[in-house]
Image (cartoon, rainbow, N blue to C red; front, side, top):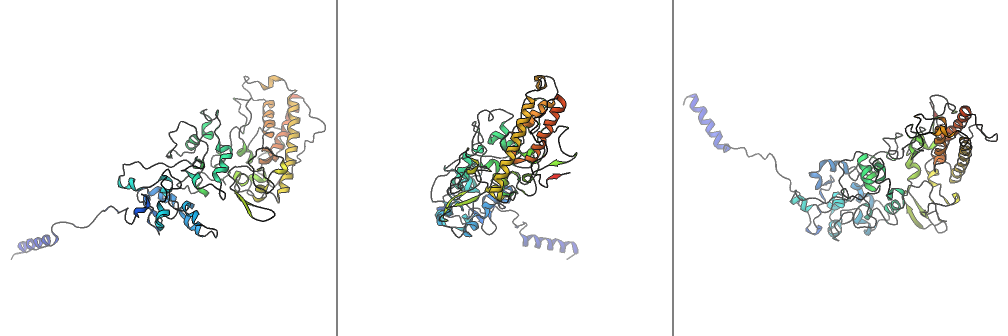
Length: 476
């Protein structure tokens, strides 16, 4: 047999042996429904318990990657580590009917006790995923933004009750209300409605049950917290420890009109808390008692209070009976009150007006700014009295300034208008806490500038030296 015939024969043998085809499996769909208990009610849970890989996460990889970093992904272990754990707690630490719009009881973990339903997974908020997996074209229910109070879906179904009354407290806060006028004005909706706030924060991909509602939503749970995870503590959409008005969650809204507007000189400050805390609010007169190139900060806006706004306004603690030591109530700080009115046991009452002696200064001592509640209360009283006195003096001077200096049509911002802005800033609730040192300097400088520019002298009895103790917060 010559060489060419031998090669042809060998080739034929090889083709016959291989069957002329390649039997390797290049791709095969994973069986996502393997092992799902029929009693689970259409809930799927984990496809890999050890890796915390949800069935949903096999396709929604980006959401799975974010979610696995959240506290929800470790909810079961958190419960098991609690010495006071009870079976009744399990429904909120597992996949069940809690948190989504499906009201069928005894599903998921409750029905099966299968570990694949440990933790608060995708279906805890979105409902059972069986129909969507079997028919990907079927729409999976959207999760609620979290506005339901004592309802059958949303964050409030679990984040409520005696031990963690997040939603109950939130409902009593300003965030839990929608004010009629700001919620309809285009320039206001970014901070006064849930829909507008999400858009302003760049959460354009946020999809939620109420997204097509024409009714303005309050600043609910899902506005500040990203349910899928964010990389920030507590799943917050922005950090709370960054001293920057655009990068700090609270300051993104609490920083409007902290500086006077030359185009609208009659408009006073509006929500200036962030810039005030950072030493950047107010009209700086030439006669202001501050060295050039320096910034006046208080302890509240310094490294001594790393959580900044939240250091005072969001503090959780438990109240116990002073006589028996028995648990009374837990507070989560979601009323966002730095100085809440409390009863004799120290539990917040939800009242807005009460004497200073009936307010808790626990957040002041806990944040590290003050040695005790009494010390914080005393400092508050001193600062408020000082600023009220100076603002009263400044307003008395401004009453003698010609009305033409407050013109809205002369295309200039006068000393009188700047001084009036500072007086308004000083008398806003909270200015004496957010940065009394800056406000005192603004007022003293304004009083001196009004005297120089208009010849209106202050009363002889008013001390125009810096009296409030300045902490080591004056930085170049």
